[in-house]
Amino acid sequence: MNRAKGDRAVKNENMIFPRGTVLRIQRMSVEDGPGIRSTVFFKGCPLRCAWCHNPESISNTPEIHWEGHKCIGCLECVNACPDHALSSTDNGIAIDRSKCKGCLTCTEICPSTALEAYGGTMTASGIIREIDKDRVYYEKSGGGVTLSGGEPTLQPAFARALLKELKEHGLHTALDTCGQCQWETLESLMPYTDLVLFDVKAIAPEQHKDYTGVTSTLILENLLKLSEFMESTGMPGSLWIRTPVIPDHTANPVNIRAIGTFIREKLIDRVERWDLCAFNKLCTHKYEGLGIEWGCRDLDLVAEDEMERLAGVARKVLEKPDMVFTSGQLEKPRLSLITGGKG
Image (cartoon, rainbow, N blue to C red; front, side, top):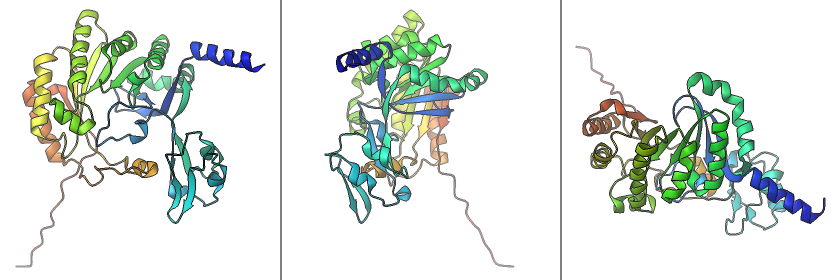
């Protein structure tokens, strides 16, 4: 095949099988909607949340990360990098990200997988083939497939094609979104979406900007438009609100009360449940692998009694306690050892 024909073939294939940049597919998930699910994490996010648990999903291009405990010191990666972005230091392999172009040559040549890629290009059909392996789990548990991220609405054509194909395969679909997009983009995905998981981190615009880099204005506008769309079309069938509970940020009664009041006054007939999702530190190694300083590294986990207190606030303000759920890793109460002498 000559080059011109080859280019046309690739173009035609991309039209038939839309491609997107995907971080990973997480199988057997039980936290991203009902039942057992596969979660497709998209690359790219318009927010910069201070506590982000998936920093590897923020950039919309593939990235490399280095895991020192796997490295055997062969320096094959340093020698292979065409852009001279890697070097050997006393602390291991250093990555100059200003030079790295994401060609992923180093990850392909690394014999110990110490250098790995965050993200890659996939087609909708390729994803379907992968997740269809777990169809029996979806069917028996009432599960399905969730598009998450990052932010799926940053790749609208790909997200739409994937959701459409999932529905054609008879699978339950969920869209996990931060809501920071044009309404027309979100609207275009709704015909193929059974459930929307909509993140609401804070109501006050400037507070939201302090936490995420953008105000809450567009996000809340889209949430209200989604509610109106559901009323007029019945799509999507379900709406869940999710709020990250982050110490020194969102984990306070004032914030929870404000979100609860917004739900009660403007969305109560549309929202099926409200999830309070506790902060965790499982992402620390991701920041280290990407060479990023993480400002929330030293935060404590949410205490068990504090989460229950915040959930109590949420239940009281909603006046529908069965709508509120909590999840995530919590700090357990410390047991006191009481000792005494013999009397």
